[in-house]
Amino acid sequence: MEKLSQDQIFKKTMKFMIFRMMIPLISAVISVVAVKVTTGIVENNGGSRMGIVTILIWFLVSLGVYIGLSFFVGYKFHASQMAIIADAVSFNMFPDDIKAYAKESTEYRFPSGNEYMAYRNAVRKSIQELQLELNTFAENKLRVPVLKQLIRFAQFIIGHALSYTFDLILCYTFVRDGKTLFTSAADAIAVYWDSWRRIATNVMFIAIEIIVGMTVGTAFVGVIIATIVSPASGPAAGGLCGLWVGYLVATAVKVVIDTKLSLKTLDAYFEEAQYADYSSEEYEDMCRYSKSFSKLYHKALDEAFAVPDGGYGNNYDDFVDDFTDYGNANYSYEY
Image (cartoon, rainbow, N blue to C red; front, side):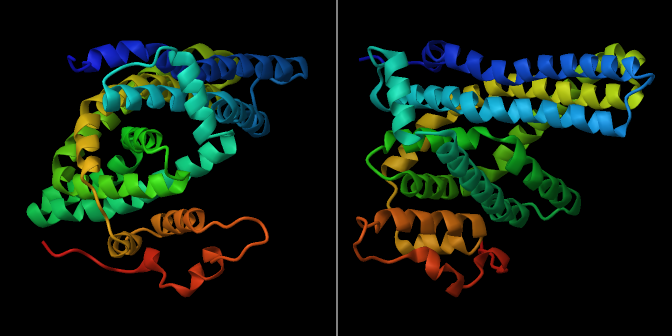
């Protein structure tokens, strides 16, 4: 059977991607409408410009709408898309009923937004902290002072801009559905840790391109929106609205970038995962560099040693604090 191409998988999961893009775009529209409504309320009460309090109220409403849509709806589209992509790459075929399969897989792994957000936050924080050590490799290889400063800057960028790494881990979580949620997450991060140490230098430049593109896009859309909104609402409200809407639009575009990058790297990632076999010592070694991963790993242990109600077992949460505070330890690899 001929292997499914990246374009085939991309097109087949496009509707989930479009739904994901609609979340920030709908939030952007609501935000602009909210500015108009707030401006009207101010004018009806004898004011001419939005004040600090009204700007704050508008921003909290706009932020709340975006978070609410992401929490209750957006995560389902995201998880559904990654479930189909993971299945297509792993088994080189699409399920007969894509919609039903995506729904079943998502509900099995993430019954509610709470589970998904807890998983996402744990994974992303672990990635961000571990990335600092991963880039030590690049620093040791490139000892030119200017390059070293650029690499330091790239550490921040990679930790926050390359969210497609979370997509890789999410795909792995769906493939290894026989394992518990945080156990599969710990394994997936270990694969990330093992494979990215070798390509950290190249990934740095990809991250810079993404963050520069998002910055330019945010500024461009922001100026347009601010120009439209400012005359009625005032420069402060117009400028903030422009930046917020520009960010939301750039976030929508980034969904496409993340999907493309995930498809481009998923084969190599799964190949690495296929032969991965990590010991508890290696996991504890990763805990030394990331306090967040240490917490995630101990959640995985809780899942692995979970016992029925009324039974006996180890409660790892009770003695986690007895371990060394790995998050503040100052360790480094020798290369």
